[in-house]
Length: 267
Image 1: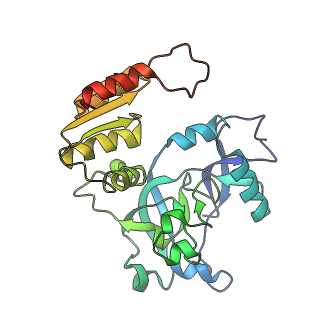
Image 2: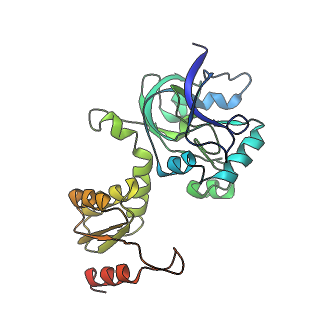
Image 3: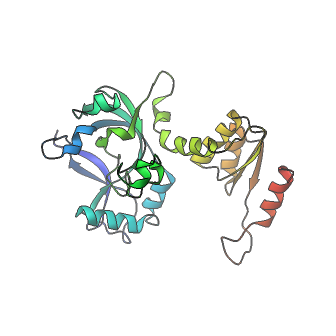
């Protein structure tokens, strides 16, 4: 197998302003070659089984997100095509020579992963604050992503998953789930009244976690009534619909929403 299908954007062939969507192309099969790329010793080849579509992917589809980051990163790599996507679950089919000893990941393991590839060298990384790495790359945006049959990924970005506990397609959503976990573990919500702005993928996870972590009241806020209906099913005690109003600026506060939050939280 020398070529595989992938969803891509090519700035030279497609253009950024003149195209829309993701373009399916045949790309070269990724490979590990430690003699020419020493970093392949700590990388793996994953056969992707399920992939998720993030809100950032929607922005890329419509060409209204990450414009500068796409151009700058491709310029640094001296190429024009980017493989898209960053939410996934799959099976390790090949592993670098140091992967097993360093990360306890082996061929045949089912894995999901984090989309942020950190450098491990900057001050933030060395302080244990990799989430704010100054040289991080993002799968599918500033480095090639996972919308392909096979992908090469640093093993440090992966964790082994258990399909007997979590369904495969849900394991593909561990990346956005991690955002909700990070948010809900930064503060103690036990007995608190929590307002969650945005009932999208991460917001829905946050609603579930807030209930699980003991929040006394969970309030979901969104512009989409259908999303709020789902939020209610997932455990939100109250929902607030943000309706269009005549405002000087789109970013101006919605007083009626603030007033309703104050009422529901007894503030």
